[in-house]
Image 1 (tube, one colour):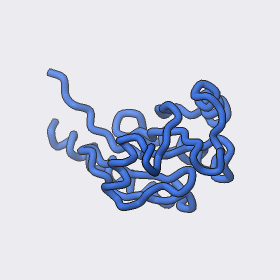
Image 2 (tube, helix red, strand yellow):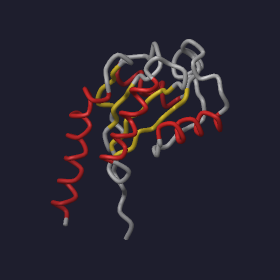
Image 3 (cartoon, rainbow, N blue to C red):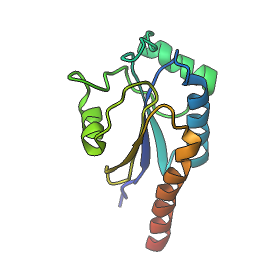
Image 4 (tube, rainbow, N blue to C red):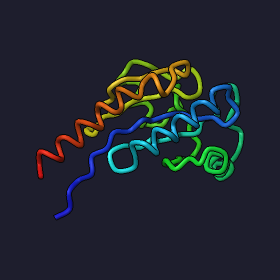
Length: 148
């Protein structure tokens, strides 16, 4: 019998040429290394909406993140995250939190059931939100332990 893998996700709109790029990519990869990939994943969505700071192609963006930061988390195609053109996933994140991205590296924490727990803007470091993520991951691990 196949069991469903429950994961915590941190959904982030990333950009390669932003002032937050270096610190966020390093911290996101550290988080992925420490907590992923079984119970947690960073889900990176490149976006060129804010300051035109993600101008490259999907292939170039992924190559940059992988080579420069060793990014091992899933990288999606470039998207629109706010306004009328926002993809359905981000519309859901915005509707769930009432918080719409206004810049790059907006972060949404999603629990294993798909419920959006909280959102943070670019100025909030990954280190500041790490306790929220580790608590959700801990709950998954404890639940699995109880089921053994």
